[in-house]
Image (cartoon, rainbow, N blue to C red; front, side):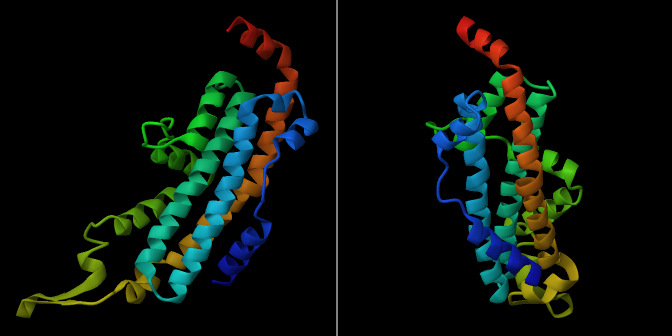
Length: 232
């Protein structure tokens, strides 16, 4: 747990208190006259706030041996990491010509403002995001699927997690078995260590590189984009 504690403490200490659109514009007026770049920064920083909160909750739950709850929190952290990875992929897709800028603009609305409420944009499908996340980090999908079995009220998260059976005498005894079986079967701490590490790579390494590439792409394509906007 030492790696996890240190990582989460670093997140908490690094939480941004604001995102100033004016500062972004001063950094690169051409790139940051578009709302999509501002939304991209907001998605990144909101993800850090969420991961710091989930990470702190995960530590508290493990320390109190509440492993089912810890696994449910870790599943949410996995989904949050996947959404940032999805944004990173789309940043690259614009620069490489796989999607146009208007499509990217809509995706940033989905990532930042998506939800099931009728007033929201259609959210990005989490499983789609996880599939892209797993391309960079192959173990993620396997971890997520195991976490989901416990998060849902399926056999693993219900009867097997909270009871033992003695069929020869037709007796079922209830207890919280997650703490006892976790080191053998679930490896929650090891899974969290990998998920949190993968998130850091997406946040600290992949996002800055791809965001800077997008800024340069916007500078290079400014006249074409302005012409398209004028025609629209």
